Length: 259
Image (cartoon, rainbow, N blue to C red; front, side, top):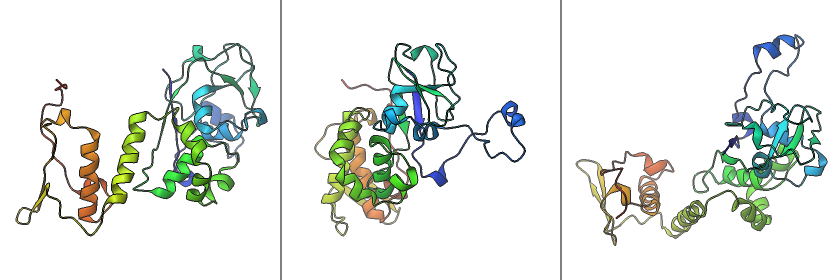
């Protein structure tokens, strides 16, 4: 299946791709139209008939072609990782983009979407902004996504966002994020007296033991264990860096399967 990357970073943190030398040579000397239109550019220029389509759906369910005719060439897009021409549904009606630079048509198969994936416990503001950006329709990024209270807006449309998100985010990923949030909320930042954590002051090392499981191989340790280790080390080290900013060594047979 084809994939598409949605650059959900803030506008000032995105990198654009220059157009080809052949195209640049045809531009006027003072032209500023030197960058390839990315997915977000095409989304903001979608026709009025698609005003209620969110960015995730736009990236997954549609392609932009240079021409309205069948077998039209796919428009160059700096965010597409893999485009397969024959996945366009020629039976659907093509819609013209607002800027007149292409036609939008449905796909036969959904693309797999990838994005920055900000974490709530590490960067709540960008997490809420990203969720709004992906799963709620918007027109103007600055007005609808930048100059707003992201958390309040997210809470207002939370049910709608979660419903749309469930179409693209695997159930296990949702469970992981929820488990992490629940764990973080339960923890008392002033209490680090864990029975399964020992600190060696001489070696400046933490020893973390898993309690209640018989799993002793890295290939059999699930994401829940790593989530707890990560959360606890961040708490102990008083930092939001992954695993508290310290090195974590795991040992075992990475090719071992569950019995």
